[in-house]
Image (cartoon, rainbow, N blue to C red):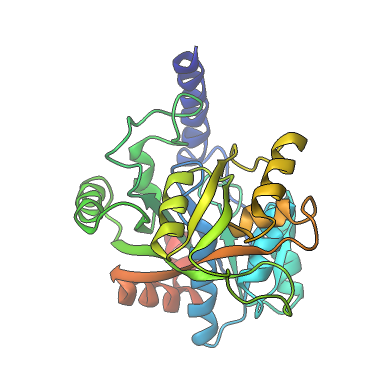
Length: 322
């Protein structure tokens, strides 16, 4: 049944793609250059931290970026925490969000999770390839697998970035070689690595867990195993590991067990999970979030060149000539 549903989903994607390729559907122009960060999989490829990295690079180049999202509360809150120096605008109609960003003084919009959102024109289409999945699981479309589009979709990308958390460097390099055989776009590589923990609540509480043990680790993300491995990598040893569904919240019985186990030494989770859990947890419970750093392994200079072209308007001119 899942494969039949995936076949129907793939047929729908094919019709949608044909409509744009044949000129039956035309992307709408935007008030400011728009850089899309997207992926071929559902969650886990690092789109949110990568969007924040783009904003940092654009800010360093003298631009005034803004992040544009669909408007989900956890996405907005996470981006606001990651990017305290640029506005975050959310709206189900992303074109209206870009317009609002321009009205707030932004010179470039960074569209988070926008590769499949083809209704907006974009100056640069960046697609993230998750090395933790590509080459390790069967390429099955939703809902039979984690993929949103077939590999041929990479031909639409202007830049491909292979990201990794748990995958080894050699595997990520192999995925990059495969991507170069599919797409003519530059293929870059980066890693999202654990970089300690920080308190999820406002300043004033303890700045780090009291020792190598922490009561509970909670993961309600697409790929919980890399998160739990990263928790151990930064030196924490949770006594209880709780895995929730993606974007999930614990039921009352599980929440009570988490509170009880974490009462003496706290809880560690992801920032996305913390934003959902904090309203449910006791205000006295110590909560930490795993911090990640993005490190470049190949192609950062190529990305900077492409971003310079966007700032100069070259990306949009090339598309209009096409």
